[in-house]
Image 1 (cartoon, rainbow, N blue to C red):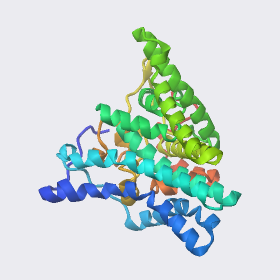
Image 2: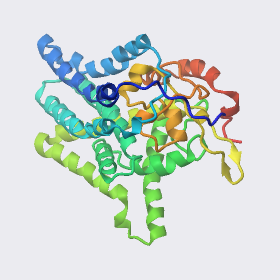
Image 3: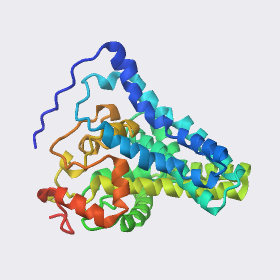
Image 4: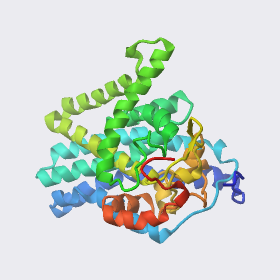
Length: 369
């Protein structure tokens, strides 16, 4: 693989580059609007149970179709993009938007006369919104060095009861990605249904173990475990849901959290399926773009803050989302994340379409060798 840096785009005017071009990533903050539309359409049509599923249809139906129509973007970011502050503030803005989204979701769940199908649909929809908004942005923030970004990322993850991801993702997944040691790297032939419960259990447990190891090394007490902090904040969220909305509010909060972190693990499945790093000495070769799936579909990357440029993220984890580059040598997904997550839940189709695209030199054979 060549280590040469991709050439930057031609320079844009200062105003466009600093204020207009970053605004394409504001799209992720508009995803909760689908919840308001669902409520409005449900009330207008007197079919609230049907429209409870509207946000899921928008994200995994309408946006997925538009993603193919808009097409790919393989251009590279400008060299000075890191210095533009608006990108950072757009990410931090997800915190109040997530709070409002959850509050609205709780209000509708307890105020609308849903039947059990509508209740399940609303939990699924709000969970999908939380997984897309809160976890996507948290994933960006927990890699950054400032206390503000670290705290914002942890609180966003706590809003879906998955605060341990802040520890395990950075100190577990990024260290062991594409090896048998990583529960977030799906093996060749493993279905998403097998993968998700394994990943949730392992990653939750491993977060505690990684923190315990860190504390023991520094001679600090168990009560300093960072996972305790994020778990306590999740309990506060759950307590508030119960205090204001009763048992229904508590069930809703836990349900949407489960949907959100299962959506996250489904995306992890897509991002690393069947890829491996080769053994080297006492460990494994360094992480390269070839060890993560890449997707260049423009619209979904705008909605997900370039999350699908995942090959660059793993090879250079400190890069901010606006700096992530396209690597043609990385294995390429045949669609955006919306389409790929839907495809993953149809294992025979997933295997048929993805297996021929796995490069032979990074294909898993059950164990990395």
